[in-house]
Image (tube, rainbow, N blue to C red; front, side, top):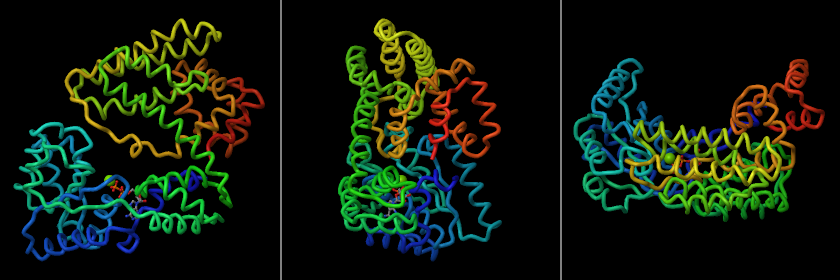
Length: 420
Ligand SMILES: Nc1ncnc2c1ncn2[C@@H]1O[C@H](COP(=O)(O)OP(=O)(O)O)[C@@H](O)[C@H]1O
Ligand SMILES: [Mg+2]
């Protein structure tokens, strides 16, 4: 059971150099960098791996660190400015050397262009200072450094380019996974998934998991599911982007009307907002204000769900006002920056969403909410998977829980099969 719900991109994270596919010359460059660092002949103290998401940048760093017997220490890009903290981290890292007998510690600053702390030149200046000050080899990764603000960084640090992975290569990797998972398949299906992924191996593996997990064979029909998932994802991601980017209440309210009311996507929307607030906002007062608005929205949404169909429309403007004026306008200081939602949220998550449509998710969520006094989105996101596990493994306890929440037979069945 536990292995089934493991995320495949983690399960199949490369362990050896031979398992990194594509980009041989980039991998060679990292090899040279680390080898010369070990021989203490390196001219460069840092390199930056640049390329689209899901091409193995982070994976290559992990694999090669092990190969050259380096420890690896990750610094969050948002910590770069905190020089005292960095000193502490780097200091600890240097001490570890003598404990483990390793040759030193690589400092990894992953996705310097993606997360907080780098919105302006100050963050980048701090990063360059760290590179100049430390004795450790530093590896940065980035999706895109074309913005003008990265020009100083590019002058100081050698770039190693990663290209998107070719679809034949992706398809071969998927084939290996299918073999390990004992899934019979039509090669055309794997080719189709590979083509869809547009060079992003992480996306391809996530897609494969979302259509194939738990199956013994995979056919072209199973891809239907994937297209459906994609459409849902698109609307949701578009709404999220508008909420975090636009500062115009009407624009945001308009996009919210496009999220399909009947499908109860709002629980999921709020959950995503919940996860994205810290990605888009960095000042404590902004974050606090955004969460306050989100929890108001959640309360209103709970009321909407408890009422009859008609009154939904009456309360909806308050709900959308919290998400627009409330969440969006909470961002008063942090500048907007692009966040790649596709790479943050693994696609297989959405499989549960389509399951959710078929079953009577809402009634279950409402029953949990009534007992525990929590928002329906929280009920679904945090309790349902857990209940599902109990239902599968401990029928005795499941019985008692079912009685407590007053679930009927159909709901019991749904909960049991929810988390696979
Ligand atoms: N070149 C690759 N070789 C093997 N696996 C890869 C490769 N690129 C991506 N993956 C798979 O996709 C996941 C994400 O890769 P990652 O190294 O984090 O990509 P990036 O850092 O370029 O966004 C990994 O867990 C791994 O399963
Ligand atoms: Mg990465």
